[in-house]
Image (cartoon, rainbow, N blue to C red; front, side, top):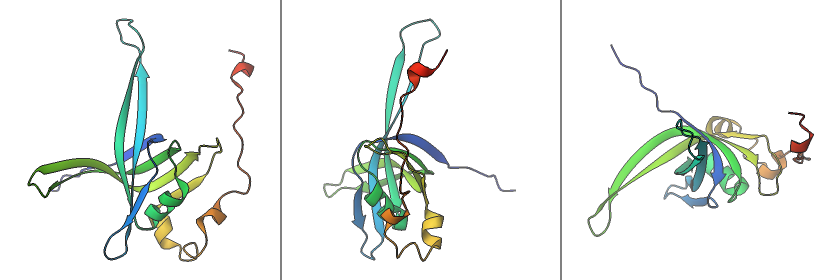
Length: 158
């Protein structure tokens, strides 16, 4: 009997830096960027509100990496989905280094620096399976008009 396991990560956060797109020796794109997630809570003893920010290293491969490099910028709010991975290596001086990162296979741009909302769903499977979209400019697939965010907080009656 095999025991099943699951390695699934879903995050919504803001980019801490612009994606860095590189290419492997066999021309596969790799993008890496930082993502900040935050949460707040009030302790059970009634103390002051607490806040915590977590920083995540995110990696995308292939077509998804190229798309991330074109669409994402520092400050953008995104949804990413993938798996957690820890890798280690030795530096030239012999030190062992470890890094934990989120390897994504799906990304959705939720908002950009200009406050526009996008509905871009970029998954590795949809990016790899559409041969015609690889020939098109990614920006052509963006909606012609994006809805502007309107502050209606004072219009809410409760």
